Length: 348
Picture 1 (cartoon, helix red, strand yellow):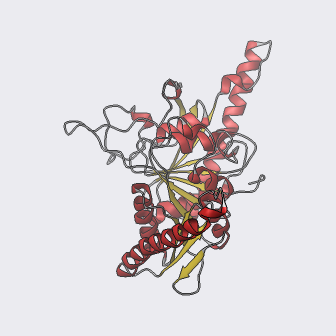
Picture 2 (cartoon, one colour):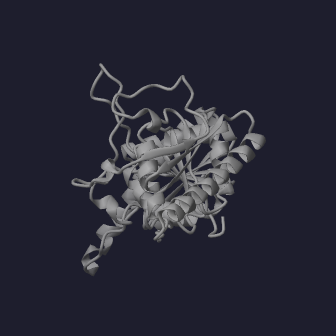
């Protein structure tokens, strides 16, 4: 990382924003600015550019000329963002790096409360591997990471349609069976209706947090509640399990009894978290839903209408069994709304 420019006051932990001049970066900046305004945090605006491969000594001078020009161009763009932040009453610092963007952002996240980055395109093919900056940052950041996808606009002015999940061609993810087994209460009446979304899968304008039925998930749920309070939105706890795959018993009656016991334990888990959140954040409406289906399938489907999806990065299975290996990677790839990824310890 040979080139490093910094401007602004000494950095105070706040909101880290990864920028690159794209439309996705513009959306990430807008969201980050809103969070900074509401929390009273400063912004740290960061952009990195890649050094070209030098094949011989003859190109050394040309490459140095390129690096100087690239650094000036990036810094000028960051300065414009910083000016917009200042106009909005938010303090901003800027840093320009010569190096790998994902590595830079992971390192910078050590001194941030929140990292915000855009997700390019629909990732129909490339998103299946951990190649993007957003995926790498979400997997390895030292603070919560907010990934903001591209904005979807309905092609119809006649009806209200929710966007389709961002799935690769030929992927059957959208056909996963999802069934609500139990819920504390239906969604509030003021939500909008979408022609292409089933009523029980409509999370219009809600903050949705994925709850692991086998782990406390307290830290994740409380941070999701903070986001709900910050944005004045209702919070929904969502858990999912394929109960018919929990185990097999030769005796059918014993099998059904065991499934009922497992299901009751999961429901009590959700009820306990909801009660704790309601006590701590009484102004945030909290409800829960328990689905038969896959964790990734439920959350990705919820992202079609929700305002935000919240997940953790580590755990033993279900929603927090991540480290961007299965559930979280699928949610990040397929989500059409922002996803907040919270780093947690395995025991959380």
